[in-house]
Image (spheres, rainbow, N blue to C red):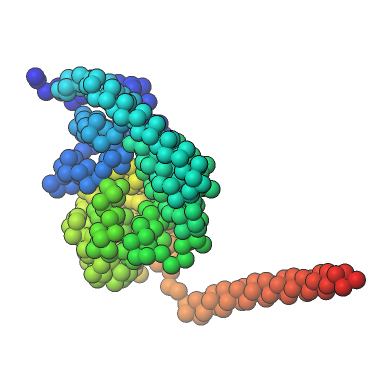
Length: 454
């Protein structure tokens, strides 16, 4: 069978594939990206780090966003659905998508569809019978076990929203507060698969009051979920600070990687990109490059370590080249992909600040060449950074130079004093409100005491 040309491999706009993917992916607009330029990239090897729904959703995302990898992505998603789930609807839809690619075998496996539906139906009936027996015995432990089995079945069927609803509607079966905490951890895991970052944070907040001293594996699970949610919400500094508390061996022993929702490579990428967006040059060195724990994650993707080193060494051209290569890979990642433009801009801003720091004045044209840009674009960027007070300087239109303002130490001291004075006034006002509140509470309490004595 002949291999089709690139145009013939592209799904038609408005096809079943677009409808299927837009239902479960975090982005509403489809942004088409080229194949990653990262050295030794292999889609199969990349996706082998994930399992189940995480692998399927990532493969679909790639199929939707990268025409060069679309056929392979959809094929991997179809095979994973067939091997490890009962999601017959997704299987049939993926086969229809793959029918648009002439080099794929797209014949439906009707026997598998029949057997998968039958197995799911039988398991569902067994679980409901187990629920009924648990209710008759009034055993919350048995009810909790049946609930766990049913949620796992719903996940295998691809019914993630139904799994969330099932857990939320049956919180009363939890035998103790610890079980309630574990139920919310499971809700956070399902939200992680659906890229719902706010829900993850909400569920984790409900865990902390009921499991005050979690064991190390549970603490590691919560830390990973928290870091991924922070990244999804573009909280760069919170993300990297959380990641710096993680260790590869602890996550491996806790079974985090075995779950197949997140990999050590993911954590290296989150930490590297968040660090470059949030940290200055010295912090990149002390917090990331010199961190033995984080270097274990960097070993999974050495290009990240080279990028951090280029940033620290002020090797701007090499840093930007490596950043472009890494971001070309990140664009096919459903967690990082939607934030690539924002990340790139923030990291570029940091590079510009780093470049201008040693100089009292510098040529915008030379600066643009070093940062692989042109003078007009660089000038617009500098204007924005000056407006945001990231750089204390002005642009000399006659000479085309950026001229930094010399900061008078007395002005800096005055600003610090004014800031302290403002904070003092605010704290004084808050203290007055607090005293007033306590006085009113005391009056009300005395009044109630007198009424009760009467």
